[in-house]
Image 1 (cartoon, one colour):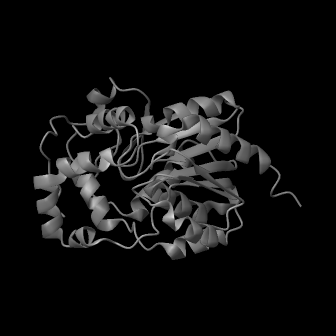
Image 2 (cartoon, rainbow, N blue to C red; image 1 turned 90 degrees about the vertical axis):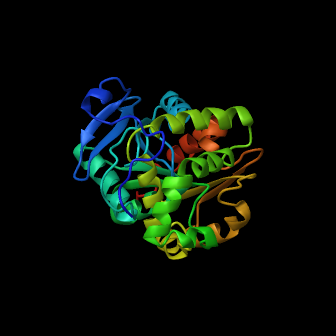
Length: 298
């Protein structure tokens, strides 16, 4: 798929622009990453990994509640999302796992930490945990992607020419439609769209999204779930009862493969539990972190 500048992408993400933006920035191998490391400096670290479209701001309410519970948080935007670089690269799993591992290493965050992933971010979080299991205290999986089969429209994106045409011609419309299905409440849906679409004014954003859809294995990831479940890392599974994006119908499969120590279904909640029900999510994360502190002790 060829790099392109999509309709409405009227800004260039550079150092001058970043001076006006909230958060911190660090250069990594593939590009500059936008991140925030905040909360009590002596608190245990929770690393919050976002999904297909979301910037780090998505976690704000959860992070603030975790800080009140004594946890430190690292939030960041994946390449092509938020205000991290739009890179001229293949947006596959290797790119995103490398970004997270390099971010942790560059910031000197080597001590045991809690890893939390949502949607596509669960796949990144699981792949990262598979490589860094010795330093991961707990893993939390929220509304995970990866348990459905690739639908016919997605199969068409395997063709570079088709993906390029669809992205340029219909990309923004498809993105806006996707965002409307993520949450139950119309006001929250509008707030989510405003948060996400502001970042999609930067050149290369739609390219990054569609390159991800083309190259990231989002479907039929049962083996990744199985390997993660066999790691022995204490795992918690959380799902919104009304999730229309990663349907809760797959929860029994997820439980069988992941072997989570805890499973929670949040009622009256769609796909984006951290946005829709931040208090519930933060309480579950803090409780799980505390309960598993001594899991590695003999």
